[in-house]
Length: 177
Image (cartoon, rainbow, N blue to C red):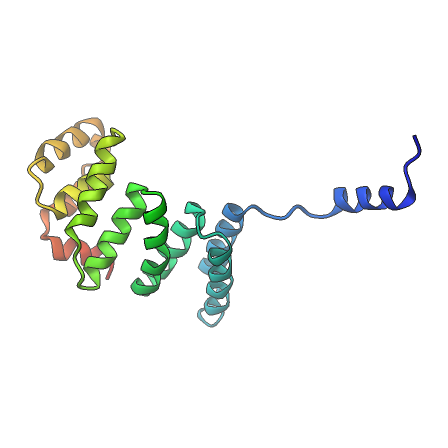
């Protein structure tokens, strides 16, 4: 069997070409680039992230990273525009909680959203800080017992639980100033 010169060249080019980064890796690199960028350069990084998010609207790692950056800048509405479709398609309690809290931060509290976090968490047997936070924001009677269970399992996190000594508005403003 004889391999043509063109085939050999294509194989060599393919093997020597840098691999195209996975979206998750690209998102990680953009977060790093954003963090290290001067203020004047951050807009360009966000534009690159926006393109990546548009190309990968169902990639939860890309969306989580991008919406977290947007939220850290106070761009809550834009963050919601990315979270809502992802959460409609695939309910991830963590991303769903982010959506609920952003809606509330924008003055559009959605109790059904928090109930969905609770329902998704319970149906998947997940008891974590996201679940606890949803219980807290809905005044659910299960909150004290779940908080105690989580504290017992994770005593090192006891300082993190002090956030619940504040009222809901203060907690929300601490997370999304």
